[in-house]
Amino acid sequence: MYGARDISESFRTVRKNTIQIAEDIPADKYGFKAAEGVKSVGELLAHIAISPGWQIDVHGQRISSIDFSFFAGRGPRVSAAEKALATKEQILDALRTGGEEFASHVSGMTPEVLAEVVAFAPPMQPAQKTRFEMLLGVKEHEMHHRGQLMLIERILGIVPHMTRRRQVAAAGPRT
Image (cartoon, rainbow, N blue to C red; front, side, top):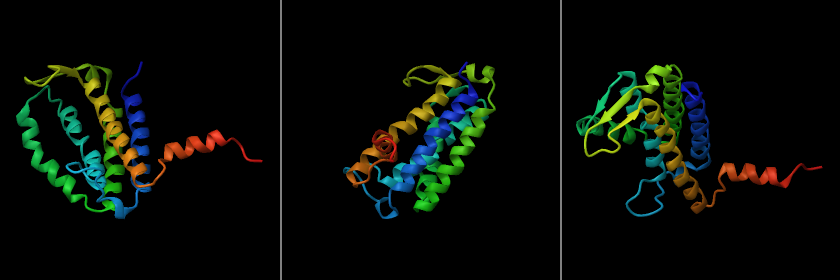
């Protein structure tokens, strides 16, 4: 059965790939924005680094109901935390430490805790999710943004690391 340790390990893999992208993009490109009105590379990576924190809070405190005031109360802190990550080194450190904090937190969750239902106030949909579903959402959220970063790499003239690995494998062994 797919459980907490599986979520934790698959998240570690996702985060490892995000960190590789963050390392591959030069620091002088962290201010690059693919279009007007979107986050810069650095802002996007800071967002990825900080965003799992709310799930650690919800599941660590066993919160069973979430409404808009929960997010409104967190908003200023989250914004400040993201803005505090101003350099490539700070962002990479936050990705590493925060990723491991999230993965470690999840790995210790029991099947009973993962099955607990968390309710969401209207008009949020769906009206409820299990903790398991919510935790999978952290990985989905990061992969969504990682896809954006891989496209940005292409715009910047960088071949994404996963593509480079596939190209090497396709070329076959060299004799």
